[in-house]
Amino acid sequence: MLVPQSSGTEYSDKVIMNATRYSYDMKAPVGPPMWRDDCLGQRQSPINLDDVDSISTVFPPLEWYGHWDNREEGFMMRNTWHSAEVEYMGEMPFIKGGPLTAEYILAQVHFHWGTSGNSGSEHSLDTHFFGMEAHLVHYKAEYGSVSAAAGRLDGLVVVGIFFRSSRGNNPELNGIVSKLEEIIEGNNSTRINGDAMEWLEGYSDMQNYYTYLGSLTTPPCSEIVTWIVMKEPAIIGERQIEEFKRLKGQNGTISSNVRPIQDLNGRQVFYSWRDSSASAKFQPSSGLILCYLIFTMLLNFK
Image (cartoon, rainbow, N blue to C red; front, side, top):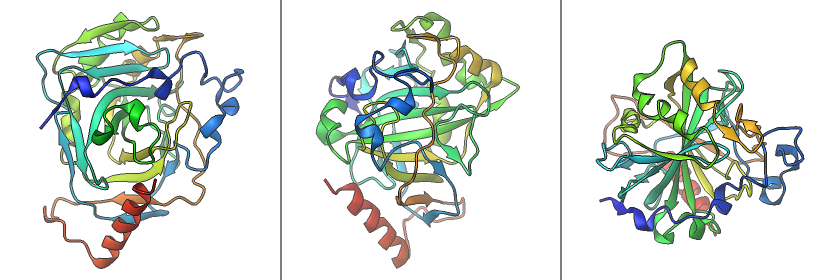
């Protein structure tokens, strides 16, 4: 089942991005050191992820519905002044399973990159950064929109996907990268082909990921996000990353749009693993069940 777009992307830019209130420049008057409100909270994102300090567990399979479908109507992509954002039209994809106790509807996909090929991800893996990171922003279906979900601890689920930079381009990303020249200026938008998100299909069977409770990585940094960060990266060409860096924000080109790593502050990170020989049926031990119950209790605490 897919959900009509009319109930999906009716969100306010004030919830996730406000171009006039913040910058990624560490020296700017509105740069990350000056972010206030929830940005000073105890459950902030992004964080460093590692196997040593994570609880290894097996969640039920993570289920994707419609994220990589070839769409006749295509997609809209726009320059938000801070990133390139892809919006779905028509029926909206959703995700469920894994650590989630409900369905979450996709609102948009956006990208983060850095000044160099090894500093473009927001999260890090064993202190290692990647060339870029995609964020798939979902809201809980029962809340009806991102703005309605903004005040709930379990309001949003963001799936993070790393991109490892390579010398050669990834042709699966051409549908997005080739259209970036049409949204160089802030607030510009363009339509992209219906097969532009098929690269996501590679994650349909992926069950190796980190999950934790965190926040938006942009002001107001609301602590309402269940993060699911895939361990295996996608591939992107170095020249393709350069095309993203041509986009313009409030103060010239967007050379970097990553928030610095935040303290864990005692939070627990879960690492979900599932190898190819594992049964498709979820049969965890009592210890794994306990981990799952603790996680869902935290998730549903409002």
